[in-house]
Length: 83
Image (cartoon, rainbow, N blue to C red; front, side):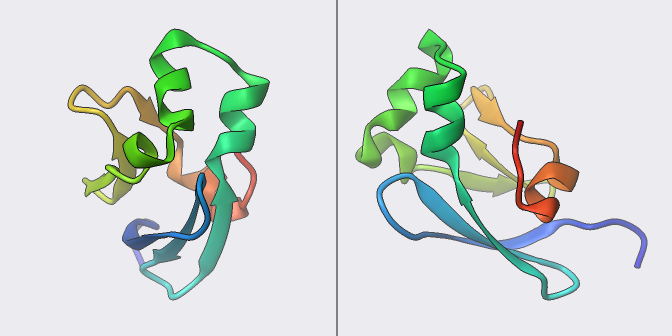
């Protein structure tokens, strides 16, 4: 396998997602925890569950916002820890 990418993302809980990677690994990530630890006007709006649920998969990654307001390295998501 050349590189790890996200092939599916499902919202599980208000601010968590379950990600499936192209090697069938699954990780559940609490994005809300990251936002609370790193408050920033660009991120804080995604504490609203309605806005949070509007993520998309682009280029093998999960992103929020038209201009990729919130995005994480796939390697961190794969390991289950975003910093």
